[in-house]
Length: 413
Ligand code: SF4
Image (cartoon, rainbow, N blue to C red; front, top):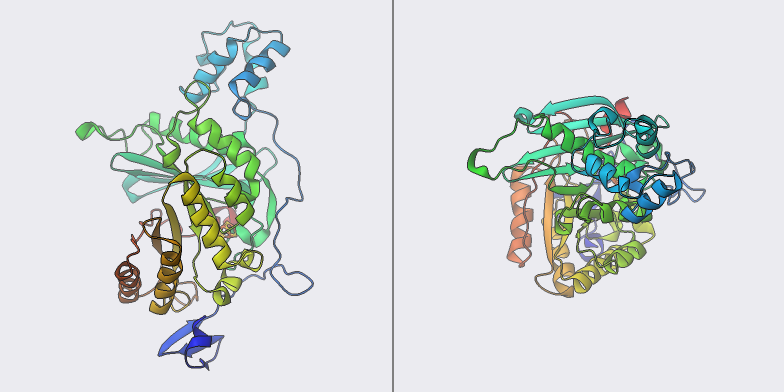
């Protein structure tokens, strides 16, 4: 904690203090109030108040479970494979297109196995058609988002894992309304299948095959949409299993192209390390000192910075997969060079070569305390990390024109 090491900061107006010739802005909500506990701490919700889940869908089940379900319905087990191919490989739930199934009873079978999960409410296209943001309505009226982004040679989908979020981060539109409920595994997966259908129909920047290396379906998943994925552990892992399962059981994606991120739910990080699925793990740290992080990421009151970094390092030790540290650079709040140095020190004290830092530039938001760092400050921050031997890459912020933070579209609705 710098304040304790250096000169005592001078208090300025509006919660801003001056410290070693740099301002220190304190986290605070703007235009809404955080729900708090009786002790005045930001409320954390690890369980959803609403337990209702959508009707079971084929994607909730393993191939074996699908076969068992079809037998229950008095149908041959091999229909499970046919239905799975339609969904996971042809991206369709349209009975008209399932001509390999007998016409009699086809509609009933399809509606039993594929209840409608996501209804498109809005689609915003930007970056010359290379980015699409979807707003979906779920069976109970909840709204969630996903963002589809084409890059050379890969297509990334940012998926939501919960309706709302219980982590109550003061900068986040999703957290404002708290947690409504966990999304089902099939609701998580259906975001990918729907995105694949849009791509197959040429809806993402057209089908660009020049050079022959452009992806034609979603290749990368990041759990950075609405919700804290590790607070919905069981369903998220169920969805991940289906993402990596080869066709026709699942989507046959590479585990290393799936990034599971968390604000630091330590027991769940430890559990993830034991899963034996080598997904990429990202810790959204955003501050290396508890003094700031307690206010910036309220779950820090439960698991401190060092505990979260220890768990991230444990993930690396167990899986051999290099860990990402996400760090949104917020002007005068967490972008001080001493914080970069402290972060590097904490990471290096665990070992070398196990971690990569992704500083994320925020959108410039005039008049807000949640605004982007100056380019010169960003450069110093990254340089400080690199000088200490920590690789750092300034992340691309796609979808900037349509909105910066997760959950804003749903909040507007
Ligand atoms: S930033 Fe992430 S963890 Fe925090 S409230 Fe928003 S969605 Fe939840």
